[in-house]
Length: 171
Length: 214
Image (cartoon, rainbow over all chains, first blue to last red; front, side, top):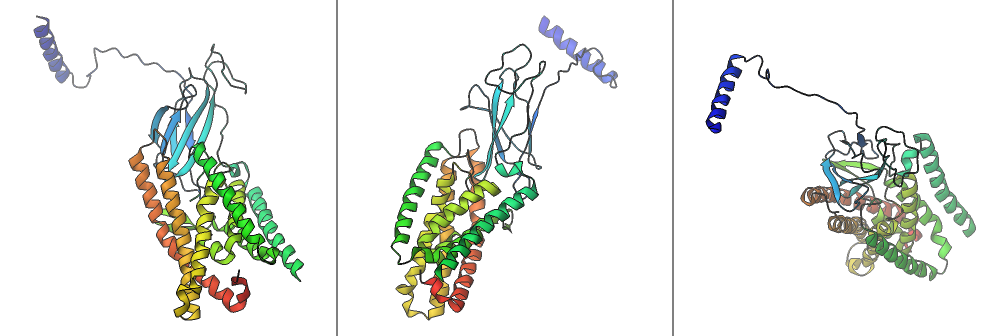
């Protein structure tokens, strides 16, 4: 019977494997391949510079922005890596949230070779999925710290100037 | 404690704007009834600057860190001027520091501004409930109440808002427990801001008591 045969075969194989301990995969062909994929690494940190560790992450695919495509959490450094499905070009949305804080990052993914680019205005290279740029939800991230400092200083000066103007008017 | 863009549904944002708009209208009307509405603008403007900066001052409350809000303090010192002050402060915080966001400006203004007005009325209770107490004790005590409860009420609104709007796909239990931890971390902050309000009110009472009459 095939069952017995296979049992015996398994027993034999087990014995063989025990004997040839150093070569446990002798008879099994392995096919290794590779395909370059573009992964996206999301970096989440608070504006104090502290990483958003173990924050919850939900990825929404472009074709169904209501249903979560993937759920995960960031690691201790506030990093989260995922590989968008190249067959779904468009804007992938990654929502990160912890204790009511967080935001949404939009990751534009261009189509893989031969597929049409849907709702993608920036140029796409051929061959693999292309992920362009890094968007951030906070406007302040686009400025250097000096620029931000000057802007904040200008705002504070605006408040003080208003105070001075109306204080002068009283006298 | 600011609610950022994109985390709460659009209906909540719209409702926030509606409430903030109504409250702004009411506050402006109350301000306009004063004999000289511009007289308090220097004070309001300086405290708006303080409010704007305060959210960048972090206080570590292990395991999290919280930042100053000062909405109770603004309410106690400014009265109805506090609401426009908070609205303007939040607007610049959203633009410059990235705290909060423009779509959630209304929600944040309502969340922090309305408790500020409550704090103002709490502080005013010193003239009725606090009459039996010595002058400075009543002043300091009710300033503490206003400063602490203004912030506490905001934290409570924040808690309810973010817990009820956890989007599908997030693990509700994990998120809820972290939100609770963050809210509990605001209890020490309430004590800090309450004491700070007391100090400021007692200081103003000593150097320029007419500033507190508003």
